[in-house]
Amino acid sequence: MSGDGEYEDASGILYKGNFKAGALHGHGSMVAGDMTRVGRWKQGSLHGQGVKIDLILGKKRGTFKNGLEHGTIKYSCKPVQGRIRAFYRHGLRHGRGTLNYGNIPELLEKGGNATESKDRDAGGTTLKATVGEREGGASSA
Image 1 (tube, rainbow, N blue to C red):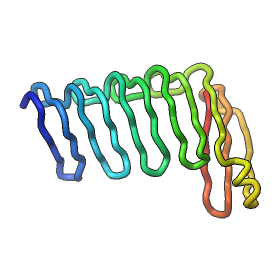
Image 2: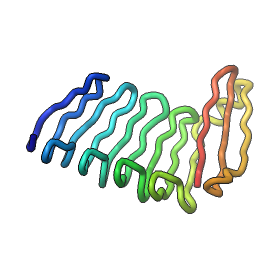
Image 3: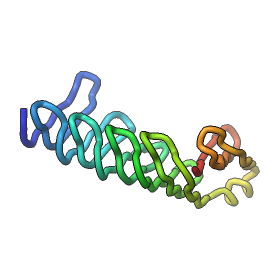
Image 4: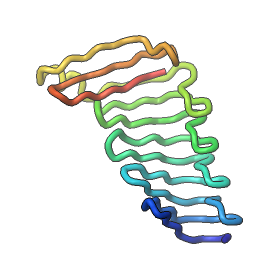
């Protein structure tokens, strides 16, 4: 199959967009449960400019390579209403980035607590905030 089309597999994953030789290729969108991916596809993977939207965690916008974050990614993190701008290489944070906390002061006012620690894998800082039973985390590289 080549050209525009729509495909839904047995598990309910739905793709609408371009196909080339039977593979997701060109511009398209995929919905799988709470996750939506929109952008350029190459041989079945998000490749180039795209957006990953997780209804629970937030949205990642930037460059992807073979389905993984690769290059500058802007991430809106729902649990702490923060914004992260980081550089990724092959799906892993690489180098330095910035993190703007959103509702951390509000969480602290409600009796929550926040801790900051070093992220051994990426050399960044990780912030975890908890209120009652709920926990949210955000990190910068």
